Image 1 (tube, rainbow, N blue to C red):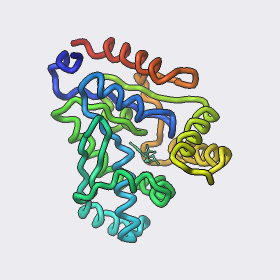
Image 2 (image 1 turned 30 degrees about the horizontal axis):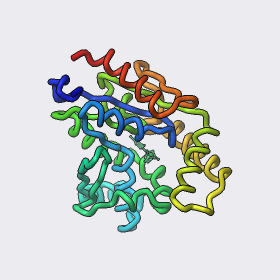
Image 3 (image 1 turned 30 degrees about the vertical axis):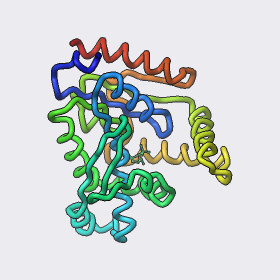
Length: 232
Ligand code: DC
């Protein structure tokens, strides 16, 4: 079993990239194959956003943001290589994927005070475990010294089509393909142009363009890269 090959317990595989290009699919598959723990850093920004919405925290007030962060405790529970998150003990994995959070998370995740706290917590998680973490700034900021880094991308039209199909399979008959495309374009723009830790490829990140790859093909490619970069 591959997991047993890695005796060290502080290995990090960082996966960054654009929205909806399959980062979490690859991260989960790699974690499962390698026996690493999968951590979805985006869910932390989403859970903070949920807390801010529920408690009407004024994001433009630094003192209010600092105070709110002191009242937030986030924990992960890894089940079946899915990343489940609790906010002050409450399981919120479903709620953080819904529209109110999705519509506000860009603004919250662009906040300097929020980012500083999340990065601190994320770095702590990589101290004594082997992890695969996905996000936007993992290979550049959170774990700039990660042993393996991937930067994922795919044709925006293909990403929109994949996301559209996923929404439809979940019963969404309202959102059009054009809406999905627009939303992705907006999030790409917000992620890459914000002042704090914008999405950018780390110099040593391996580019993985999965426009024309199946999930199996991208996993094979990634595993080959991991084995090259993480000698046992
Ligand atoms: O991956 P996601 O769509 O669930 O991420 C939610 C938001 O959080 C998205 O606006 C990008 C942001 N994010 C970030 O700024 N840094 C990360 N490491 C992960 C996500």
